[in-house]
Length: 110
Image: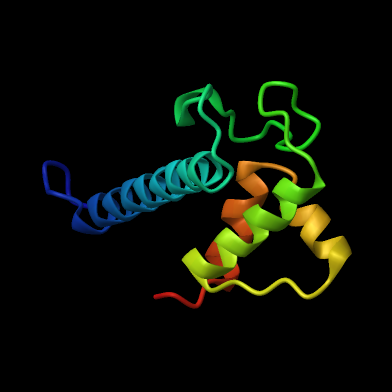
């Protein structure tokens, strides 16, 4: 690049990266809110749920296997994702990060 010239390609790539970061953050926030509303959790806010923390076995959330089913149904209705395998469901429902990763790769609502 010529010194003093504006690097449009580098700037465009930075904007795209920022958009993807914002999209990922928005999806994480949506999922956290979905967890709270679909499972009727009243004493925890979305900001208090850590992205990488376990969802089940987390004393803060106090969720059980029935909650897993309800969350799974809410994810299907909201994002159109399908999970036909119980082992896959167990893997996906580990954390907000894992749910978001699965939704990004499998959603059909767009």
